[in-house]
Image: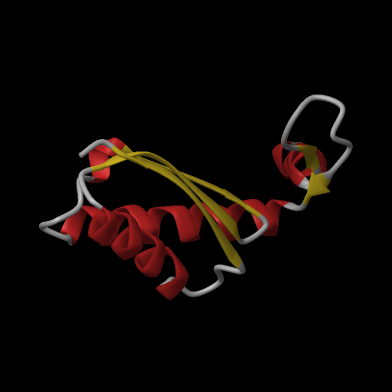
Length: 106
């Protein structure tokens, strides 16, 4: 009886992950579970790279990834750090574009 319940429950769980809304309410886009995993992988790799860099503060840089498009928000101390964060983002496998919205706080 348990095995008869497991298959339908697994199918139902996977169907729920097949597509979901992203972005602004009413934006109308969906992405698959695979795309969500890819985005999470990109974000994790980029955050690890930022944390490993002694010049950049991973705590002050927010990374958002949607379908391979990365948005950086937060603060850096100089133009050099601003450029370096963008270059790090572009160097991550799977990144299609980088929207660098970091603010230079001086």
